[in-house]
Structure formats: C-alpha cells, structure tokens
Image (cartoon, rainbow, N blue to C red):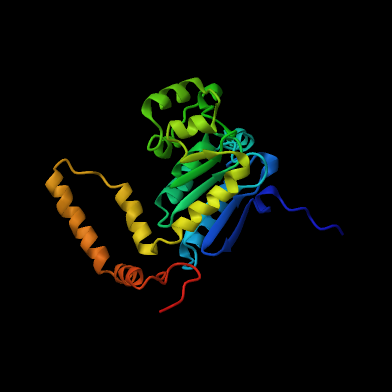
Length: 269
C-alpha cells in the first residue's frame, strides 16, 4: 500500500541552521511565495522560540528560499476561512510581536520582493538588508483591506509622509526607496547581499548578550519630557551595566587587548 502523502500543514515550511552564534531561520515555502499561512507562521514561531532559548545563538537572521522574500498573507487560506472568520492575518500579530520582542538582534535578509505582511515581518527586525532591485508594496487597499496589523512594526520605521503615499496608493517601490523612507537599513546590489549580512552579523556577535538585549530595550523606551529625569534614569542603567559581570569582563578584555568571552572563538579566561 502506498504511503499517504503528507498534508501541506505537515510539510516543513521553515528551515533552520546555526553556526558561529548565528541562527538562520529560512522561510521555505517558495511554491507559495513564502506566504504567511497558519502552518508557516506556527513553524516560524517555534523556530524563533528555539533560537531565543539556545544560549549559543547570539543573532537571528530571517532569510528565504526562492526569489520572493514573502508575499504577505496566504490569500487561498484566507478565502477558505471566511466562514470561520479565523483568517491567517489574526496570527500575524503574534509573529510580529515575537520578532519585535526577541531579546537577540534580528537581521532580515531580503533578496527578493516583499508585499503586505512580508513588509511587517522585515520591519519588525532590528536590521534589514535588501537587494536594491527587490520590490515592495503595501497592496492591501487594492484588495479592499487595510494594512492594520503590520502597522505595529511598519509605522515605527517608516517616514510618515512616505507611509501615507505608499499605504494609500499601493504603488511598487524598490530597495533604494525602501532605504530612503526607513523601511530597510541598507540596500545593496544583489551580489553584495550575503556579504553585507555576514558583515552585520560579525559585528553583532561582538556585543555582549545581556548588553545587546538591554540596548534593544533602550532603543524602544519612551523618552521622558524632562531632560534631567531622563539623565537620572539612564545614569542608573549605565551604572548597572558597568558593574555587571559582562561590563567588568568587557573592560578587562579591552585593557588586556583580547576578545571578551562572549565573542565566538575567543579564548576563555
């Protein structure tokens, strides 16, 4: 008797690998243009949680298989779910929050087009590096919907005047424009994409794990109106970190002209 073929939900749609302190989580559903289906998002959340829990992982890279980074919500699944009202976009908020709140630096490697929810995903990453020729678009209004959930990450990155134009028109724009308006960190020629991501990760792994997590919190804190109140709070944070085990090791390693223990490949002292 022939073995039953696996259902789509049972098929792996996420691929992971870890090397030199870097966990790469790859969207691996190219036949579906890496659309954000419920199975893909479920597997993605599990892979990200595993990377967060792994003490050997220092940096997380979000990558993709095939020519498309992510086409957004799975519209076929969405159409099938109309009766139950359990459309896949309802889960997207959990995915964006998990990436945004990840205590480890997250780098998006965008080597191809991204649309709608895919833009929310790359915006949730701390650093996004894209192929300058990659195309982007907020296509929601052309489908009769709004870019609501993704705005949680996108509007924290995107210039507001540009957001109005790009959200309302649904126009297609390239990587250079994405960099200009703050959606991505840097746009490079396709042949330089992997080297650029590798260089960013090489810099990130030199940061102390707790200090990196603390810096991410610092970047997202609400700034008090009163300058002196702000300075007082920040002084306490700085003091705590200088007196921490990592802070003491970092200062000692600098003075001894060696790598601190957290740098992959460093000698343990």
